[in-house]
Length: 296
Image (cartoon, rainbow, N blue to C red; front, side, top):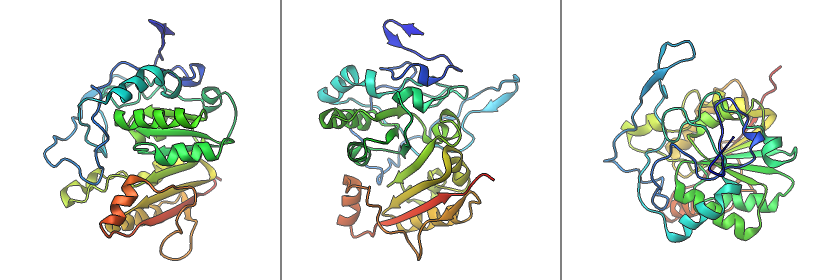
């Protein structure tokens, strides 16, 4: 349905029927320029976990697991504000929310062929940041479709600006909590590749439970991937790389797609600001690659 000239989605409608959306209700104020994920705010309060009712009327707790981000409010630059006004109607998908401003209503579904207007291999980047990797890949691989998942508006605005300058049209953006996108918004087996490049390491011991790649992530990522699909990861934090490898080695849905300790650097991953920062601080970059085992 349309509201005031904007496309809107009712829970249960397929996003593919709508193509893309503009600004959408239920979001927090615009975020600051994208914070460095390697420096989480130690004073930021933990995101609240409100309760709601399930389909059967029973009480349920929203987000049973901690989220892997802390959202900061602030102001975007003038150029970023213009991006939301001018470019979001094409690039940003209108996602119906559950409770939190970055949640995804469990009945919402994205139909890639209808969103992109064709059937093509789909690459999903989780935590796309300022979009350097995914915009470059979308430009280099016009025969693929790309979906950037990010919670920071300034990063999404920068992604749209760069995509527009590059003439990229095979890219869409979702402002949402990534596990909910992988678990419910995408149809099962919709993605050919899922990328997790330089996620927030939450390096303090008391914060490691917030890491995106933790026990259980294997099933989350595997649901979205087609049989034989690729899960690619990279980080500059050694202990997080070890945790990623342990979690995915133990996931029954995946096989290693590399020999030795670590995967070679993925040729399709451009050098980003986060990677440069890690290298400048003397940290090694470690890549991992896994193949989705057939569902039988």
